[in-house]
Image 1 (tube, rainbow, N blue to C red):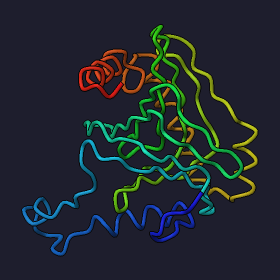
Image 2 (cartoon, helix red, strand yellow; image 1 turned 90 degrees about the horizontal axis):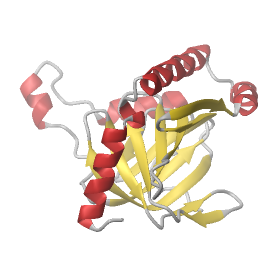
Image 3 (cartoon, rainbow, N blue to C red; image 1 turned 180 degrees about the vertical axis):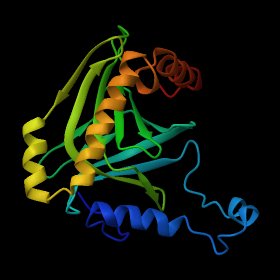
Image 4 (tube, rainbow, N blue to C red; image 1 turned 30 degrees about the horizontal axis):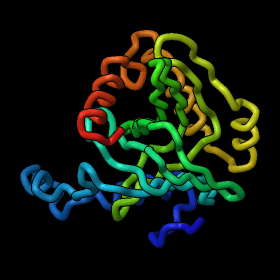
Length: 215
């Protein structure tokens, strides 16, 4: 697995600084100029890679051949279908179609495996806000996750890994509190079947992909 050639992310602060730097405009006082200089990050239908890092900048997981299928108000959505997934000592291929939701301005992303029996499996990664650099999507994984099915079950997992990572990577207390707040937010979304837990949203995207021949 090869790391992308762009600048290496070494911490959570570096990720946010890189994001802010690449979204600055020359004249901060001109809203018109700002709107005209929005940075073009990706195209719908674009095939890209996804890079997941640890807090110290180590490349943890890489997805090759993900397709950007939607730019929604709250999410950028990608499709994993026969996508190659690599970690340090293992490589596999995503056999079932998977929707990969990257929340905008929030600290999580989520994969939803599309099953024929409609019991879609949701796996939520607590993570940094995502960033797209030269067409490659990046984020930092924080080792605490949620497993769920759309209409029942909300299980927070990997508590021991999270506690160990707090020690190993010296997570700042502000980050830890933010991740706890994000868990509360996600549970609230689960209770009202909103966001990634919305059957209407997932079914609509699945219908669109079937009609386009992507799945």
